[in-house]
Length: 449
Ligand code: PEP
Ligand code: MN
Image (cartoon, rainbow, N blue to C red; front, side, top):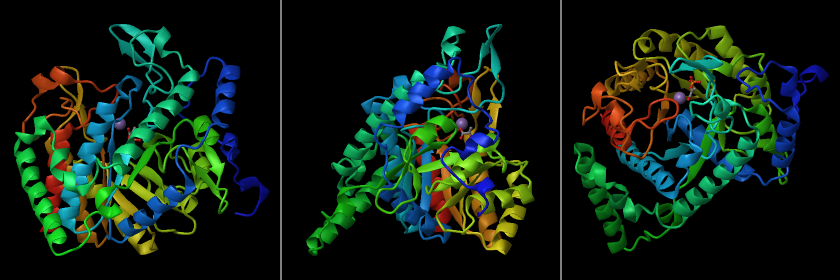
C-alpha cells in the first residue's frame, strides 16, 4: 500500500471511526484488561488458520461447501459441556448429510468460542417501561434487565477469553478424541430428534454410511485413518470489539505475518463494514479468512471497494461474502452483485445467511423467524447462483443443538403461541437441532438434483 498514511499496524484502526464500541465507564480498567489479554496465549494458531483458508479456497470453485453456524450471541451461563457437545453434534450431522449429497468436503465452522459481542440498532431499549442500556453481548454487559447489569464491564472480556479457551479445549477433545469418528455417525442423532421425520431420514443415512465403512473394512481398506476418526472443526465470530481482537493479534513466529488468534475466521457485520471505518482497517491487515455481511441495501461500488480493500491480491479463501438479503429481496438484489463480481473475476466464497433479513416480531412479542422464509431465501440463493453461473459456496445459520422454540415452522410446525415454551436466546432466534437438520436435508435435495 506504500505511503506512511495507510501503513497497517495492529492498532492503525485507532485512526478511524469504530462504530458499535461499548462506552466503557473506566478506561484505566479497560486498558489493564487488554494489556493482560495481550500476554495470554493465542486461542488458535496460524497454521490452523491457513488450513481453513485453503479449504475455503476450494469453496470458491465449488470443490467444498461451508457450513457456518451457532448462537447469535453465546451466553456465558450456557458454556457447558452438554451445550457445546449438542451444538457440535448437529453441525457434524449437517456436514454428513451435505457431504453425502454433494460428494465434496464440508467445512465445519462454528459461530462459537468467542461469539460474545453484539452490535445493536440502538444504544438503549425499553424493558417494562424502563429505559436500559442495550445488551451488547456477554463480553460487554449482562442481558439481565437491570440498569446496573447493563453497565459495560471490561473484566467480561477476560472472562470471555477464558470461556472461549475452555470451549475450544472441549471442541478439540471431541473432534480429535473419537466423538467425531465417522463410525459413530448414528450416535450423533439426538433422542429428541430421532422420533421426528428428520431424525428418521438421518438414521437411514447413518446406516448407509456404516455399511460403506464395513464394506471398506471387508475389502481391507483401513477405515481407522485420521480422516475417519477425527473431524476438522474451526471457530469464528464477529470481530466487533477491536481492543479485544488487537490483544489477540500475534505475528506468526514461523512464517511472519499477522494473525488474529481469537478465532480462525472473523467476520465484519452489516453495521460496521464502512470502507473507511476501523473494522475494515483492522481486518485488512490480518491474514485470517474474513467474512463480510451484505444486506439488501448494499451499494455496488461500495461492495467493490470493500472487496478490493480486504482482498487486494484476490487470494482465494481470503474473503467470504455472507449475503443476508431477505426472502423478499434476494431475487432482485442478488443478481447484480453476482454479475459484477463475476465480471471482475473476484475470488469469493458466497455464503447465504437466511436469518438476519427474515426476522419479525410475533404477536406474543418474541423476535422470531419463520422456517419457510429461511428456506425460501436459501432456495433462491442456490437458484440465483446457478442461473448466473456463480458458485453457492456455503450457508451461515443461527442455530443451537438444543430443543428450543425460537423460530416458527419446520417439520414440527412450531406456531407463534409455542414460542414461549423454550425461548432461551439472549439475542436473535435460533433454529433448533431438528430445524437445522431439516435445512441440511433440504439443501441436500437441491444439490443432489
Ligand atoms: C449476526 O450475525 O448476529 C449479525 C448481527 O448479523 P448482521 O451483521 O448481518 O446484522
Ligand atoms: Mn444475530
